[in-house]
Image (tube, each protein chain N blue to C red):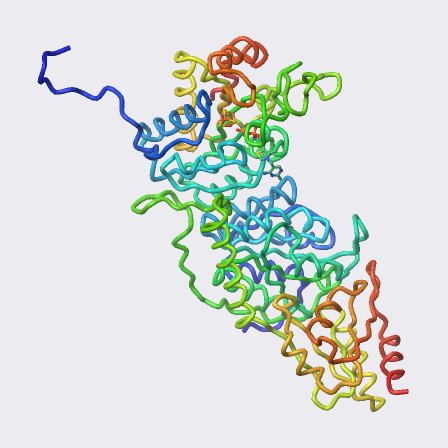
Length: 350
Length: 251
Ligand SMILES: Cc1ncc(C[n+]2csc(CCOP(=O)(O)OP(=O)(O)O)c2C)c(N)n1
Ligand code: SF4
C-alpha cells in the first residue's frame, strides 16, 4: 500500500484499472463520469495503453467486446443513459463469455434526468438490462478507497468467471475527493486459451454467443452460465455489517446512501438508540444470508436508497416476511436526509 | 491433353483457408463466392494464421464456419467497432469486418463511418445485395428505386424513404481510407476484379497501410424472388448502373 493521497473517485478508478493491468479503455463522454475518460486519455499512453473516444456508447461497448475477445483486460465507463445504450453489448459479452469491466457512475433518471448522483439503475444492473438469462456482477463501493480496491477485484472476478462486472458508483462518489492508498496489483494470472490472436500453431478459436441448435448448444451455454453464477454467489458475495449485533433496528443501504446512514447511525447511537447498518457491497450476488443474519430479531428494517425503492425488492426477497421493513428514498439527485432517518428510527420505538 | 494413364494435374483446388463444409447459402447466392475470394487471397498472402474474421448479423452470420481462421461475432451493425477492439490489441494481425448492407449502412452506419474516419487498419468487405436476406427480404438502405421487397410491397418510394445509399462515394469524402473500390460477382470477369480488390485490401492491412473498403454487388435470388440467371441480370442491368463499379481510392 502506498501513502495516502487525495484523489477524486473517478480518477482513482482509472489509476486502479491501470494497476490491475487494464491497458484498453473505450468510452463516450457523459457527466458525471467525464473525469474517467480524461484520466485514461492522459495516463494510458504513458503505459503503452490505448485510449479511444468512441462515436457512441454502443460503439464503445463493442470495442470492449473486440478487445476482450482478443484477450486483453479492458474497461468502459459511462453514466445511466449511456449504460442503457451498452445493454445489448453487455448481453452479447455475457453470451460470448467475455470478461469486461463496465463502470456506471449513476445519475438522476429516467431519460436524460439530471447530472447529479442517484441510484436508480439498481434494477438495470442486477436484473440485467439486456436480453436473455444472464447476470452481471455488480459491485458498489462507498468510499474512494473502496473504488480503488473494488476496481482491482472487478478485473479478477471478470477474468476468473468470464463475466461482465459492473462497478456501480454515483455522481457524488465519482466526483468526491478523499484520501486513498493506491492498491497493489493482485497479480492473479488467468489463462485465456479461448482468445483470438490468429490461429498460429493451434486450431482456430471462435468467440460467439450464437448457438443455433437450442437443445445441445444454447441450453448448454445457459446451463454453464447458471452454474457459473452459482459459483459466483458462493464465492464472491460481499457485505458489511456495522454495529448490528446489539441493535434493535437495522438500516440497509449501499454506496452513497450507506454513508448517509452511517451519519444517522452515529447521531442515533449518541442518543442511546441501538441501530445497526447492513451494507451490501455486491448488489448481485445480493448478500441474502448475511442480511438475514443481520436482520435477525430486529424490530424494524429501514432500507434507504437514492431511488424510489429498487434494492428494497432484494431486501424483501431475502427476508421473505421475517422482518418488518420500511423504506425511505430520495430520487432525482437528491440525497436522503439524515434528520429524516433519525426521526423515523426514533419513531419506531414509540 | 495427354494419353490414357498420364498424371493429371490439379488446375483448381479449394483454398486452404476455406473449410471443407457444406454451405448453408442458397443456390445463386453471392456470399459463397465472396468467401472464396477472401480465402484465396488469404492463401496467396499467407495470412491464414494471422487472420481474425469478424462475422456480421445477416445471412453471413456463420462466415467463421467457412473461413478457416479465428472468428468473432459482432452484434448487428457493430462489426467495425468489434474489429477496432481486436485490431487495437493485435495490431500485427489481419482483421476483416465482413458485412451486409443492412448491417453496414443502416443499423451500423455510425460504426462504419467512424472506423473509416479513424483510418483503422482493418479491411471491410461489404456485400451489397440490395435487401435484408436473413430476415426474409425487407428493404435495405441499398434497395433500388421501385424495387419490391417485403416492406416495400409497392416498390421503394424514394419520395418517402429516400434513395439507395452509395457507400463507396460516401466513404471517399473521408481523408483516412487508403483503398475504396466497388466490385461485383455477377460474372467471371468481375469476380476476378473483385478478387484483385479484396487481395489488395488485405495486403494493405498486412503492410500497415490503413483502412481498406471493398464493396461487392451480390445476388440474393431467394429474396428477390427470381432465378439465378435473372438475379445476375439484376446486378448487371439495375444495380451496376446506379452503383458504378471501379476504384474510388488507391493510395
Ligand atoms: C439489433 C438487431 N436488430 C435486428 C436484427 C434482425 N436482423 C438480422 S439480420 C438483419 C438484416 C440483414 O441484412 P443484411 O445486413 O443486408 O445482410 P444479408 O442477410 O442480406 O446478407 C436483421 C434486420 C438483429 N439480429 N439484431
Ligand atoms: S437469402 Fe439471399 S443473401 Fe441469404 S443466403 Fe439466400 S441468397 Fe444468400
